[in-house]
Image (tube, rainbow, N blue to C red; front, side, top):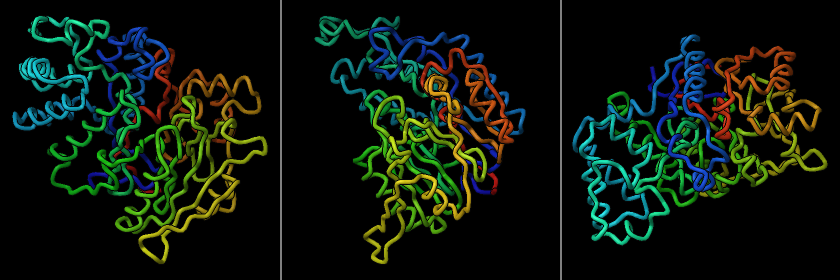
Length: 411
């Protein structure tokens, strides 16, 4: 069996990577929630209860649940990799240099692999006991006391969908758009290159984190064995989409079409999967506010050109028409988040009513708070598995955002 294989959004899910929320959430403060891409501060104990419920739903369906933090700790059992990884992390903590950099490095190297991972994810505070830094030797320590961290916390890590996306038997490792999330894709890079489960499997990279233009996993949907959709969004650039299309056409021969969807560039619609997900072979969830007053949205089918250095790109105004052609279907149905009630739609979109995780054809995991949308799904014959979401939804991402599928069965 292949180590990774994702050839659809809806094939029965066999293996997935999650990240349990931890100290990084507790290190959110009102002064820095915006910089760290949060709108408010969740209550961690309840957040963990809800995330554990999510993991239990998956396990009860026979899905292997791997945890990002545990995979990374297993990688760092090698001292050489531990040193290399820590240097990479600190190199991307832009305000560290010289004396401070040396001291933070020495401090973190004292920890076990699991403790180091927790510290890097959770953030290194300036007032930590055991971090021996003389204020007389560091101007940073003396004048930048208003920012309490030497290494910033990474509260968005529980959205494991974004740092990478598995497509076919390969992976797109994200060039994250926002500074607060740049380090996240380091974890998946080191895991794939060094973990015993992956390192000898030669998983091809369709794009890597050092690519110049940003692309994030939440914008990538694997529609079928032959087609993917990617959002042109606040976080993913058109240039990166062209680059990954060229790589896929050249090396993943099954893929013949890339559907680029130009969604509004604003935080509420930060990724394609926050406004559009696949429920079954012909059923999709969508948020109506991505459409213009004529019910249209600019979409583009990208295909190979006879000249391998070029792409053939055809524009569409109708997402339905573009999807039908991309998937070779006669009919599709777009199910609106919140139905026809604009107030319900806006409210439930705020808590990711359209961000569903399909774990099998016609079986999706959703937040319980989006009860209007969930009822509409059920009325269309979808099996809906709800998870409690009073706190976990405060990070502005749903069940699809919180999961990185590694392996799905063929549809």
